[in-house]
Length: 476
Image (cartoon, rainbow, N blue to C red; front, top):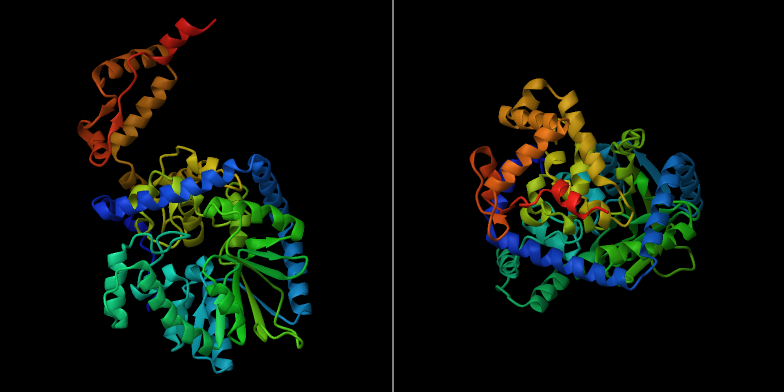
């Protein structure tokens, strides 16, 4: 399996292709609608939801403000319990450490639990490049691994594939009959993976949280594959971003209330594992050797950025993807890297570089739905605007002019002038409303350079009555 090369610069081409895929659009809409419905039902049963959100935000702010001290405490606790900690400056350093560790132990078979962090650094590709089999054990990750694709959603990596797609894939890659029923497909995967769990020399996972107070990894899941990956192989390696640390168990309680409800609408996932180092002499289960790889990979730079450090609050629930009108129509692959959707449009430029991912901050309507749904109250629209400003200010003039055609720049200047001249604003607003009126409230086609919008969606017609006129009549 070769490591996926980021295709973030192909956003517009990818999006146009996705918009023409009717199955993809339907699958995205159905899946994200189910996520949103389950989440809303869970939130409605929790009247103190907003207080928990605010508490989580405060915890993240306080933790990141003293991150070094929390990390030092975490390292001491992990080592005191027999674990080994490696602080990786970047992805290649993390991959080298894990490959060298496997070779030193004579390991040639690895099972992996679902982990966006290991996807970020291309760990599976690095292991396979060294001749080490690295098998994804999450059902969705297993499917996209067989298809040699990137995940298209933080929670549901194979959200873009139909049951028929999966059946055909299994038939081609595994030489099996073309099963059609979900239970048959699941049984196939289980039979394929069971022997791999038993024979693997190393299990690799990420972590949802790590507790500095006790050196404990916290992993939440619904399939049980992560629990098998951490308990059956003799060596467990956890690759964890530095921002995943929490001070103690009291803080964890807040996030265990928010994460499953926001992600899948559950009060709690089927499996929650708390792992504190390798198994002890009197214990029967668990790995006999444990290594924690604390990954930086640009996170320290983000932490030093007061305008964008808030992006490190993310707990990877996927809610902002589910609510985003852009993601729901183009899917995750259009973004060109492993972090899609609104939070990906912030994180990807920060992790890959602004020039590499300059298109992503503009892949948003700035409707604010992502901020409203985020369980940690991350102000994603504000950060997208900050990144847009940096694109214009820091990238070469030729690049920004190519991204913003002359007609668009002229329209922005005109809008700015009208906003400073209320009388002319009212005249123009009345004229536009009169011209663009529609019987059903929607415009199905717009002229000239605006036609790009209505190629794939309708545009709401302007109100016949201007707000200022309405207000004159209604105000006391």
